[in-house]
Length: 257
Image (cartoon, rainbow, N blue to C red; front, side, top):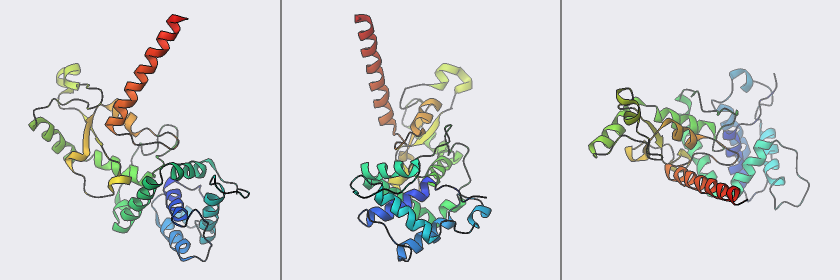
């Protein structure tokens, strides 16, 4: 059995360590490396058999990963170490949005320290159809999906919407299940976290943290792309608007030609 590849969660934590160190690598005997090695080896991401493998996320391997971050960072002028695409994507993410990625690391550490991230069961779609997870880390996605599927929280959110006098409809595309499907769709809607856990942290979810979405828009809000994930309803509405404008421009150019 081979030591498994580094997951996004592990890379987030390693990347945060390097960024806090001024984009410099850390050595095996550094206290931060020793502590991160112990922390990563405790994460509920790998099987007990994998975690028992000699060298699994050892201080040496953690130190080597910090070297990957340093030497593959664009300002570095020396020879880069060889590393995989996930590490390169994480370097890009920390470079483009350092503050958010450091918040992601803090949220993971907070959830680990509280024990919360150890108790959340695996979610079927915490990994998307392409086999990728959100660059902010699978554990935060897993926790968010579990919260969104909490029947009590969903029921309270739907009650809040009804008491406000609003229709139960998608807040992005305005789709109304009851209007389209009649009695079959009455009372059906999905809920989505407006703010990702890497920003909000693992605090208790409030009703205003949730938005009502149709299944399609909900899926698009969660769909991962390299360096991008977790769209808010507002961001998805803007994406739809821009996509529609591009389609109109394309149609106009085709008719003109």
